[in-house]
Each structure stands twice: as structure tokens, then as C-alpha cells.
Length: 313
Image (cartoon, rainbow, N blue to C red; front, top):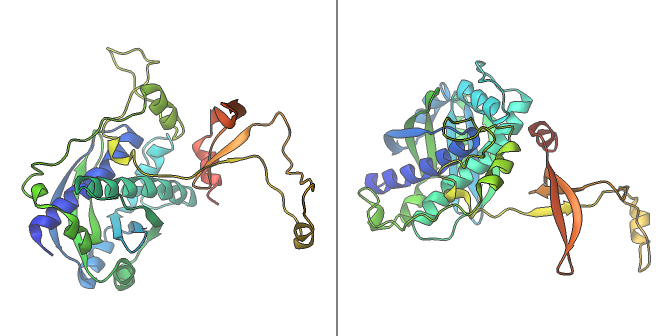
């Protein structure tokens, strides 16, 4: 581990993650790295005694690993806020919390990796595997072996309007190899960050899918949408969008008997909306339209957080 490069990598990874949380929770997070060192099993065991919830992701093509260790109470509170409920005071996770945190992990860790890789001027790594786990201190060696041989640990604290906490960031030391010299020493010479391309109305629609209502402001009508800050770090993350007309289960014999001219009923009525799935998860519904002789989907409904959580099961 090279301390200067490790600090830059940790700062960018945490910035990307908290930028996403800023958007999801409509809060302005501040964080501070309080210590950086090479992780070992004994050290991680001590942390797991306090930070039992582990959000982790693997970057495809052996690009490295990244994980966030959080207190169960902080993780449960994030899950409650994403669902639009009152801040939770419990210190354990329900199945519903885990489903919500899986979505949060994919967005926040994806934002973390994107922030670092774009600042370094390289191609953004795509997440190939994301997990939400509750770990015990005796799981330290197992966790480290799954993350990789050389792992850097960065302890951090964070604050928001009505939140304060701490955690530990774990990431592959290979991330430090992509940090260019121009970023060492405060990020001088880093390329300018592009402005978000989504309109305020579009951002309001997206956040409504998380059950979030923007707070009214004295100099803005209560009905006016608000654009959360610092969303640019996640704008280049690629997701697979699929329009699903319907589904049907068929015996293998019937499938083998299909041929030109065969008709398969998918159980979808003509006037029913078509489902839009993002990475195989139900996000919205809409009507089929034709645009320039191509089929398109006009969004009519953003599904509720409860429906999206059910789609994970």
C-alpha cells in the first residue's frame, strides 16, 4: 500500500458512494477518512464486531473488489429512508431491508467505482456481483479471502442533517495502481466533472420510484421538482432495459414442437400495460408506441418501492 495513492483512491470511492446516497436520500453527506492501512484478518474481526453489515461488489473481468462495513442501525436507517418511511431506530435488518439495501449497494458501489475510474481517466468498471451480508467477527478471514489477497482498509466518519456515523471501506490495492500522479495532493489537474444530463422533472420521476418526496422550499413552489446534487458520478453506469410483454411456462415437448407459424399465448391482455425491467427488476409500466417505424414504450407508471422489492424475491 502506498499511503498517498491509497488516500486518493479512498476519497474518490467514498465520494462516489456518498454522491449516490445524496441523491437517494436528498441529504448532503460529508465524510472524512480517519485512517488507512492494509487489512488483515485480526483487524477486520475487530471491525465486524461493530460494523456487522457488509455491502460488497466485485468488478467484472477481475477488476477488483470494494466493500462498505456499516453498523446495523445505520444500514436499517438508510433502508427506511429509501422507502420513504420515518428513520428507523432498530439495530437489525429485516428481509425487506436487505432487498432495499441490495439496490442501494448496486447504486452506491457502482457510483464509487465510477468516480474513481473516471477521475483516473480509465474505462469505468462494471459490477459483476453485489452482496448484502451480515457478518460476525469470526467471518473476517472468509470475507478477506473472498475480497482478494491485498486489501486496503479506510476507516471513515460521515454526517448529514440528522445523521452521523462511521464505517470502514475495503477495496483492492490494485485500485491504487490506476491513480495518476496528477490526483495526488488534492486532485490538482483532475478533469472537470460533466453536468448531469437529466432534467429536474426526470430526476423527480426517478426519485419518486424510491418513495421520496422533495421537501418544499420558501423560494420554490411546493410542487416544483428538485434536482439532487452530485449525480454525475453515476450517469455512465450501463444497465440493461427490457420491455416484457408477458411470460408463459411451457413443457419441453411443446417448446421442441415450435416452428414457423406457431402461436404462443403469453397471457397478456391487449389493454394491459407493458412492464419495463432494469437489470431484470420491475421499475415501470407503460404503453407500446411506434416511433420512426420502431416500437417504443411510453412510461405511464413508476412502480412503488414495495413492488420493486417483491421483484427481487
